[in-house]
Amino acid sequence: MRSRYYNKRIEVWQTAIEADGFGGNVVTESLLKTIWANVQTISVNTSNINTQLGLLDASNSIIVKTRVKNDLTWDLQLMFIKYRYEKYIIASFPTDVDFRGDYVHFIATKESNKASGNDLNANLNV
Image (cartoon, rainbow, N blue to C red; front, side, top):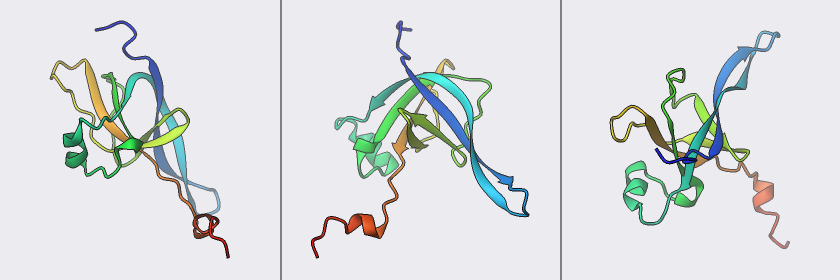
């Protein structure tokens, strides 16, 4: 293992539904763990990854490599990561590449901005 290979900090978050105290429910996000990782952007040469996952725009996706955490069970439905204060949705299940059990990697895609119709039409001159 190369020294300083895992040099970025990512946060692993999970969404949950909790009671709001007034008879309803509210969706909350809770931090599960902060871990060291190696984060890389997807290059143009990795087009096979793009077609396998159906990624239309690889500029918003990253490859994350991290050590195996025995106290962390990955759940793609509820979990996401934050890297540099941006929310990334986990697009592929974390896989053990060489079947050695020491590290996993997965692909995460940046959550899209939720622009309203007014925001989209702001540049039009009427």
